[in-house]
Image (cartoon, rainbow, N blue to C red; front, side, top):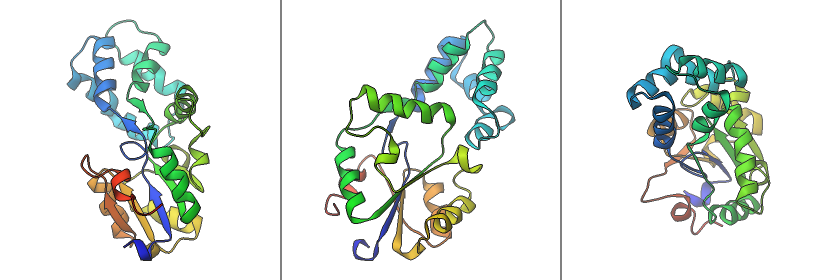
Length: 209
């Protein structure tokens, strides 16, 4: 596969950046004084989460909706803190790897995310005192679902990425930790690899950079 690849598209959370969904679920459960299942019901009711990741709901409105869903009085600041709890940080070894890959391949980032988290990515990079100031330093282009108005695993988002960057799908590798996203990329002809706990990007690309 390596010899045929000229372009690499990376997922973000769970691939480039460490996330822990349970941290946000637990934070909301404590804040709202409810069960984890109720938290998920709040976040996914009326496609709230999906609409936010597709940029269909402004950040302030999204926070206000969650404030209103709380069974007890909470502030927008408390909700934001719980929402961002999922974001753990950049594994330090990933930064030099991605910068090295960028010199040999056309590299891109394609992430299901939202405005609140993209703002926090920059703050986390600064707190970690990284050699980068943002994700844009590590990739030729960055595609965020909230800016595109669609999200993985919709095959249309992969078609858009290919057209936008002028990529040949057969020469393009997409890596993601979710099976449904990998399958969607493969459906439009992109080469794929699924990231696992046993094989992250350090293992996958150890001989590529």
